[in-house]
Length: 286
Image 1 (spheres, rainbow, N blue to C red):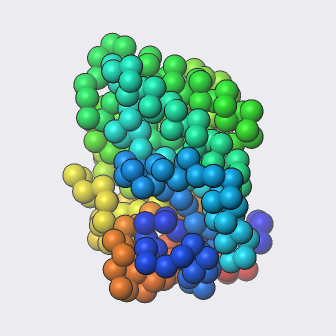
Image 2 (tube, rainbow, N blue to C red; image 1 turned 45 degrees about the vertical axis):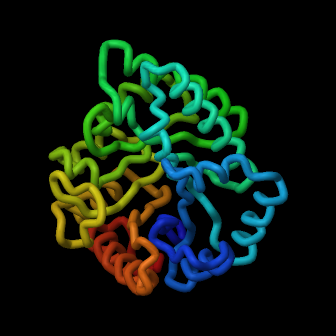
């Protein structure tokens, strides 16, 4: 095994009222290896994709100084700017954001962009929706391959979405690019009622990262670890069997709580315990 399987924390779990260096340094002090950036529906986070070279350099310098890289990005903004939308303007805006996110990732050293599997979350699904979504991804794959940035489709919650690894594999096989793979969310898989171990098996060789959170049916977010239905030990055991050694990301939303660092420290300890029990890591890698 490598010296350490990379274990990261989601940006939204960390304090907001600090600068980037302090935020990353806090993550390091708790024991995390990387932080995952968010580009969500908010105008503030989307605006980052248009930052100047100097602004990007400041964030890159903060990561270098802290020793905590911004290894991955969760690009969930396509929940609103749906790539499968029947509205051409919405699709164009979604594609423009995807291209900007790839350029941003190249400058910041982000290796993997988790592309949300939203066909048209707020709209409808018809015979053409999936085709439009795939056409948009095909364009994104060209840009990503030119930049050397990996795209990984996320298994999502809700309707009009890529809800399973088996569903995501249809797109991976259709688009047939080394730059487009799968970055599953095991909490979403469990909330939809899928057998998480079986789904991970289906994605063997195509999983570039894993989102880790607990969930319940109808509650895909903010379920405390251990209070949901996700079979963590079984999932980590399956990943170990598959030889997975990519990034594992603890996804949390601490909403800028005063005790956010205490919360992520406890979450890390809990998840590491399950990883040890499942054999994905051992004591020598801690």
